[in-house]
Length: 120
Length: 77
Image (cartoon, rainbow over all chains, first blue to last red; front, side, top):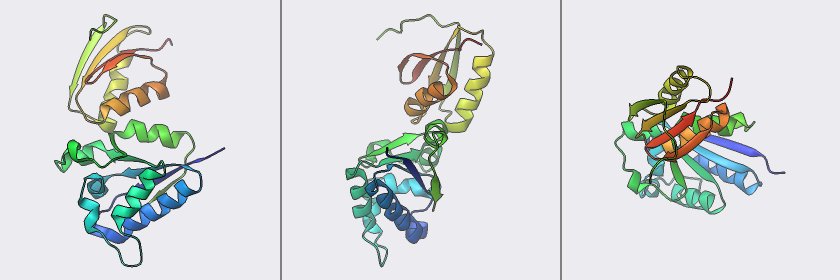
């Protein structure tokens, strides 16, 4: 039976290394038959805005846009922290495919089912 | 679409969201009796995901929902 796995990402252009490696690990999890969730909070929520990831190309890794697209294509889910999104006045109509704005309860429900979580 | 139940209490949480919303929702629900229904209005973008999740976790039935309105029954005991 597939397990659950969560990757928490709190960085975007302020730390492209962390933002990128977070999605690399998320892809490893989803490719390993895990029900995988990426939780984007604080600065990380910017990754959920269309076009933003196109400008992040960390040396040594695939472009972030490609990593995100592959993750979603493989069935990965992306939760976007609601207050973090609102604080930055981002537009919900510009969300990338596979991303959903949620509050804490939705994340808690996922983790409370026994999912491990790694943070970047 | 009309909601199917008459609420015993109402709470307009405005654009409150995340932990603050569900914490105060917990307190608000405690102020009504088991079996009674609270009509919550919450405009936060995360509410459509959060309120059903919170209801599943706490066992308080979500009787009806059409964002931003949620009818939540306080569970028995």
